[in-house]
Length: 134
Image (cartoon, rainbow, N blue to C red; front, side, top):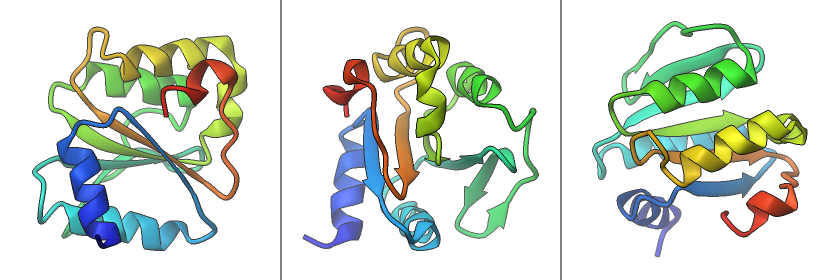
């Protein structure tokens, strides 16, 4: 199977948490954009410098909310349409118990849509509590 087929299958299966270790973020973001041709989901990207923004095949919306990890998790929880959320270099923020709990609630789909969360970074180290869920 190709990378595109693999990602499409994971998204269609509503895989709650995907971890991708890479130095080439741009290639991974583009690969997820291409999956939109195969699965119907809103695609979002978050970084601490830009905040949360919707990125689809042909557009990038302006960021919404503050570029803060807590705010991003709250906005994801409140989203009324299921989506794919690419969280760039988010793993350092998992050192906070509140962020771990919020992420775990999203993964276990407590009070939220069945989103697919994707942690992307050069080296992603998950806390033990989240390791089994990825």
